[in-house]
Image 1 (tube, chains in turn orange, blue):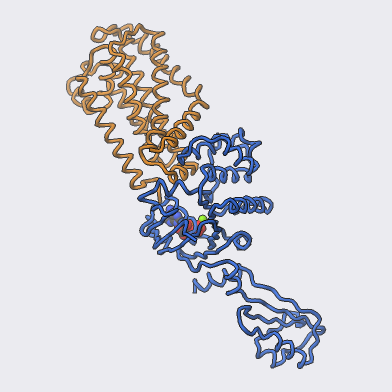
Image 2 (tube, chains in turn orange, purple; image 1 turned 90 degrees about the vertical axis):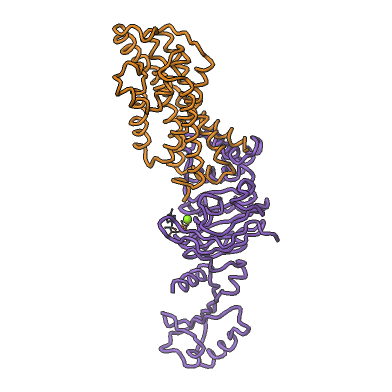
Length: 253
Length: 309
Ligand SMILES: Nc1ncnc2c1ncn2[C@@H]1O[C@H](COP(=O)(O)OP(=O)(O)O)[C@@H](O)[C@H]1O
Ligand SMILES: [Mg+2]
């Protein structure tokens, strides 16, 4: 293992993050606050409770997921797209490093940033609602593994993207609907039966459900399914990235 | 001397079916400066990319310091520093951070003292905290060299280091290269400036259309293939060339006041003595005589046009 390389990539990427830290933090905090005002206060005052949890608190896991998924995907996507775009990727390709080290460095840094922002949102949420986290260990666990797996997805996206538009559009078109339809603002049991079946095909549903279970001890699907789903997703991403570097797809001529 | 880089039967066919390298064999000795000379599109960058792992070879093998560049890529690549043809840098990073990043990437532990020495050598130390986008073109190029040297490589590839660079900076680059050679680094330099190969190289390899046409000691190459021209200035113009001189292959200059004779320096008899005697016999008076050695450029152009024919 080339630990020096992992460290170098990680530090380099985190430096980039800290150079633009205010941008990175302000926008999710502001949008989260808006969500609380609109969904939590305005709509929440009519919905009252979902399965015994106040609506304001109920949406916290979904809101965190929304931002964390977007952040993981776009951070990692940008992290590898940028060197590809400027040409500095030649260094990565000619360095004595393996795919695993590249993943740990780039994906690790992107996931760290997403994790930090997720925690900031959680902190922001406590200003609006009373929260009691039932399984804090699992909550952090779900959060970390989510950051990692979606950062891998973003990494793949960054390698695939040929321009900035693709890089920005795909997370918007892919992640936002999946999160909204994955029960971030409602329990799936509130949907008509036919739609409940459709919703089961949405991988993000399993994430949000598991995450919500960690908060409140209740879930749309058994928590074991959630773990299995995210495990499978992770494995797919690892295999995909490994294949990309082995074949040099979109990287090596 | 041992081969530092050994390229055997290396071919590269790009996805679009274009054959950029055609079974290239090349042995690069430790400590030498090899100039890889070729016109645009000859395959110089492709060759370097295939050696460094940026492009995947279609067939053939490459070893660096005895390590196969695919099977034992870590060992092989650790020995290589690369300055690519394009100026590609992280504009928002500082000089020091970007150089330190490359060192880490190549698996070397942090050594800020070494990096300081390196940046001082390249007169970049004053700029170490500057963001790259604030630097001049020449400075950026030096940053690229600093990055390539940050992990103390044994082999340095410089892909057209002085293309589009002003004369002053070119001379500076040459000084940097001489220093490096002095410290025992093997240098592979691609260029289409003959002048550069002539100034820097120990050996010259000529590549055209993906094939190596020749690899030779520079001095020997110039001696072997070098033609010299002898120009004899006359005191008065002549109407036509005397037969005795025409038979020797002498040509009349455009001003009709000079005779031009091309000969091979490697030949046992250059025929100059006889020529001078014939000039006197023909009743011509000479005022001056000078000779000119053909440059690598002439040799190169000769080779490449021959190849195209
Ligand atoms: N990625 C690529 N795909 C297809 N053809 C390429 C690619 N890169 C280079 N070539 C072609 O290969 C040939 C050699 O290019 P290159 O190695 O860059 O030449 P040089 O560096 O000697 O100017 C050129 O004809 C070029 O057009
Ligand atoms: Mg080139």
